Image (cartoon, rainbow, N blue to C red; front, top):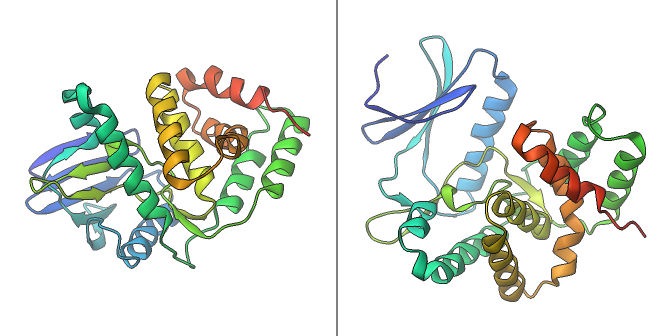
Length: 250
């Protein structure tokens, strides 16, 4: 089947625009359970009332699984930040406000963030030793249990601003329910992988607006760094390993 244009291409999926639709077509090796879970995540978050593209269908296209959602015309907040760096603080404030709105929602049927992180830490046997894995599991278990909606990959490229200035949040494949500070720690690391100055601006603003102690978010960083390490991105490995290695266990 021919589509209008390719929006993005990954190792195991291609995202197309076709009229008013965004169609994510998955590769043959992509687990069917992960595809269906992503669709379920999206619908559950949609039901919270957050401004996200509407789910249209899950289907087979030329023998490949595909998820079709509403296409949103606009620019990502990442593009806007890069085009207008003089107003970066204003855009960062908007970004944090959107994340706080996400955290204000509840979706009891979403997977639990702690369960997901425990699985990821357990899977790192080839990368980090058993003692470090044990310490990470112990720290994770000691962290407060919350039930807030967490995006799981919240960065400015996952916010689209339409022509009317309305923000739409995309890519809910990593959504869970859990502790908002874990979600913030992941966003901090995503910024820090590319720009430490932006990462620090983000964390200062998030903590101020949410009235959260910076040290509390920082307690999540080793755990979140370990879960990010699962992705196996070579250029990220050394950076993430440092965050895991500097854990100050009590």
